[in-house]
Length: 412
Image 1 (cartoon, rainbow, N blue to C red):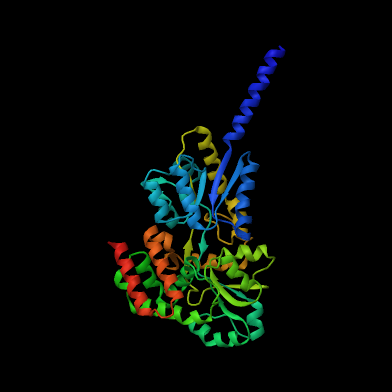
Image 2: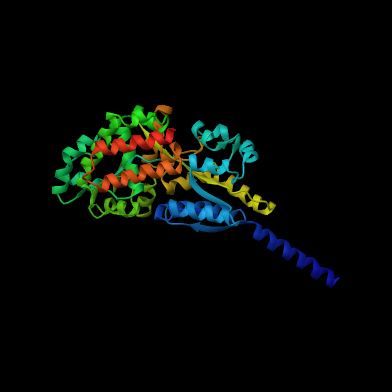
């Protein structure tokens, strides 16, 4: 009997070890700032609470994470899941046969009923669900120092003309009028607000949805570039290659009046112990009070063969789609839950503003670069914006012409 017992317990130990290994899940993402780290930890803790082992695969920035994911897949050692912004690039991975479909989970959870139609459209490729949306970001927010505006007895600007009329006063008082980093991310966020707020939502939709080259070369777009150029003199001259959370720190420490960023910035404010409406303020960027430039984070799952790996992926997907988990995650991430049935009552006042604008329907919901263009086109636009921002001698007309050429090529 002793021998049988030893064999029995040895078998149990082997089974336990196998199960433990089967629940290991490497998850790749680029969430490394304070608020982002706290947010992704919600998923990690939830996964481990359900018996899994989360292996964190963080990279610094989207480009680094994208490269790491593609290298891992090409090398035959894919992660269990990876984070991406939903859009053309993710759909292309699915079209290449690299992603697992989540049809059974989506059907069982009735995802199509609980997600906005635009998200359902973008996570579905050839009739198959290929990603889990975990949030809904607005990229066109203005986060401002309540102290700076209170000290100067100036209201946060509702238009860019209002900002330009007050910028010299802000600068004369020793504050940086606008915090900006000279890189693709931050110039992109600024351009969203310029095109929607100065060029207009209709032109924005024509360019980003219809890929209309005539609209891209229009006077509205030239005016947006011109306004972007006019505010350049009021930004930090030392902001080259500055990470967005370092730029945000200028607002957090009351050195700058405001920054244009996505609502993920709220996570960093929260990590710094700051509360909206008190130490900092939030408002949709000048001219975009009725617009929401959407950035949607999803997790996609590379195709794997072993049943244990599939089981780990399914467990991750299910917990990421849980409405209560999404609410907890988005408290730190600063965004809205992707699920429409999630109770957002516990989220902050900025989220409530965003929810009202999103409720305005399709006319208020604008796509970001990832939703509108493939990686090559997005890269060309971002290169143009960085070059324009860092080259005062480049005219708005020249930038508009180059922008129109990029959109023309994207449409062909």
